[in-house]
Image 1 (tube, rainbow, N blue to C red):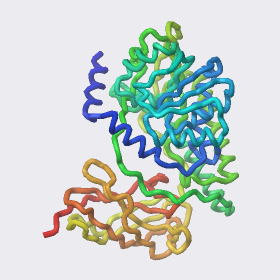
Image 2: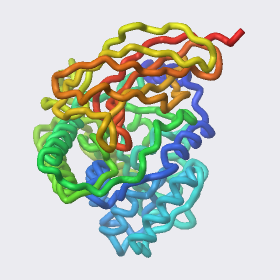
Image 3: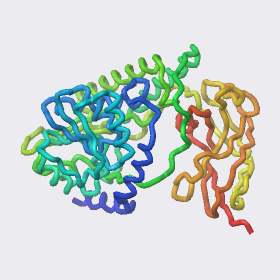
Image 4: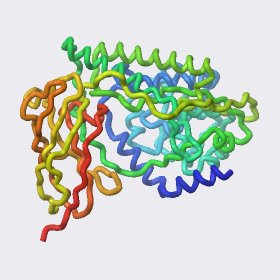
Length: 439
């Protein structure tokens, strides 16, 4: 009880609202330059694995609701696998539902439909054999009330949720994204060495705006047992849910498809191994099946060494270190400053500003709350191709924001139209900047 109170106090600091949560999801679902059914896309591993975990429960169902379905990628994957089952996907984001309907139409799926609605308010027109939620339950503002209301329509739930700890945060003791990331790095190096052609993705947008604030209430096992009072819970862990996609995640090629399939099969085997060793509940996601008035054996969390997470063991293409020469600390509104940045190439690829697309140095600006307010700063070229292990000095123009205040400048490399270095695993350099109103 005490830990539950602490969690509520921790969450209350965020002042989450349904409106801000919707703004956040509308932004992230605004567009997509990838095909979720193509194994070239790293996210396809998660789509397939989450669908695998739901499949045994869907197989004995005729009418299934996927609530908080987002762009419907897992919903459509299951609808393809089970053509005799009727699916309805519901999400509060109209951007997500538009994408879901387009995907279902492209796949010619006649057994799935999508509706834009707040899932907490949505009510089924008839009884449901199963209610599914993939990484969506923790966005609910009132989860216990939701379970009570939906219990009028179903006796069975299936969730995939981040593993929560006593403080209500995401616990990642066994986080194996570095395994996939290593294989993606190996793929990129092989493609670079052999000159493998790839279908170019659409031009990449700059960093997304920080619109909205998603509700993020993550729960430990005892909370799920409380929230689903009267239900039996069958819980297994999964290492799926890759967050780091490597470079050019929207690009496609036969090599990328082969590696994507290898990663998927490896993650299946890793899940199987951890379950066999009774260590799977230490993984970062849980697959939770809840059935009314059913009894399942209660499982306990394994003891694990969570001192540190492994990092990818091979060199990356965009590994870099930065050192600031002069450090501009003050500026007037809208003023452009010059920062001296010493950059060292710690990766395996030569960076050239003369090639197409060029590799450049740039910056982003964050406000005091950590929100990006300038997603794309001025670019500066490297003075010569930077070989692996080499360093150079770059004079980077940095434009001060158009309002006074205290800001953070993030210095970051960018392979134009491919990736920011920080998105490929190289931390950006940060320095503070105080901006004054022009006199």
